[in-house]
Image (tube, rainbow, N blue to C red; front, side, top):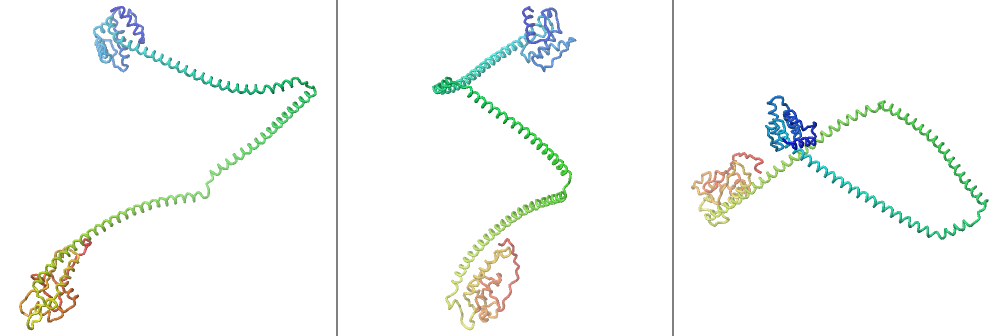
Amino acid sequence: MSYRDLRSFTEMMRALGYNRLISMENFRNPNFPLVAEILVWLVQRFDPDADIPSEFGTETDRVILIRSVAQFMAVKANVKMNTKRLYQADGYAVREMLKATSLLYSTLLSNASEQQDSEERAMSAKAAANSIASKIHELKQVRNLVSQITSKGAKLYDLLGKEVELGEVRNSSVGRQIEINQVESGLHQALQAVRNEIGETKLKMENVSATESSLDSKIEKRKLELERNQKRLQTLKKVRPAFMEEFERLEAELRQLYESYVLRFRCMTYLEQQYEAAEQAEQERIEERQAATKKLLEQLKMDDESMKLIEGSGDLFSNQKIGAGDDGIITQNGDDLSKFAVTKRPAQADRAGVRASAARPVTGRRNGTRVFGSMTGNKLDGDSGSLDSDSDLLLDGSELLGSEDDDENDELEMDPAATVDGGIRARTGHARKPPDRHYDHSDDDF
């Protein structure tokens, strides 16, 4: 331990603001309570929230205190202390504590120098600002003086221009002899004018007092009217009007009507929305149905074209078998006059039947059923007594020679099961009714 270190330590602690005076004689002998107090104070200066035990009554407490301070200084301040010398609590402990004290003191000096520099800069800036402000104020004063000098100079120039005339008038006035009578008359006139002004002023004052009294009376009257009206207002507020009950009843009815109106308006809006949605759905269904109908019509048209092609091929085949005859009728020898009589009407009836079958609605039961025919019938046995022979048709004379409408109706009533080898068997003498057929019609067909 040196005297220089001890003096530096005491001065640094005094500069840092330690609350106790440290003498140079305090560390001649070991003084652990003072060392512990200084160490705790230094730790608090580094970190006020640091948790350092301050108990040093026993040896264990002292060891814990020294170790905690050494660890704190090593971690926070990056200062390495010798715990053995700190525990001795003599001059060597002062040398260890001087490490942390010098760090705090250097920081204090740097802050003080920075603060002084900032104060100097502030003072210089303030002085500069004051000088600038003073110069601006002086500049304003100079401008005002310049304007005053200009105006005064112009006025002086005008007065000097009038000095010639005014000098002559002044000289004539000074050289003229003034009579006493004129002076007295002038004074009397001035006094009379002053007296007149004084009388007018007194009259105005009297009028003011009268006006003030009248105004005071009016104010009192207005105050009385105001008090009377206020009392009347209070009484009217306390009295319930006769129509108030009816007003409240009508107000309640109006509120109920308004609520009903709002409810109905909401319901009507909802129903309109639902109606629009239903119309839109119905329109979509109609469009889908029209599309299905259009598709079905196209399919029927294609079937009709295919039937026409089949009919054309059947006519070609029949024309190869039939010879040329009068009006398309083929006859044989003898009394058998109409055994194999064939006309063009059956072919026409066949075509009408095909068209009628194609024009019928296509259902699940009738789909694919078609009627075929030819211009010639099948050659049967020579038995004229057969029920299905063509001679019966010729002898009857009603079927072959019948109208075209009857032939078409007969063709429409023919049973599709009667076709044999591409030919059509004609009805016997009386027409058989076709079996009743039940057609299921539904919206899906169109």
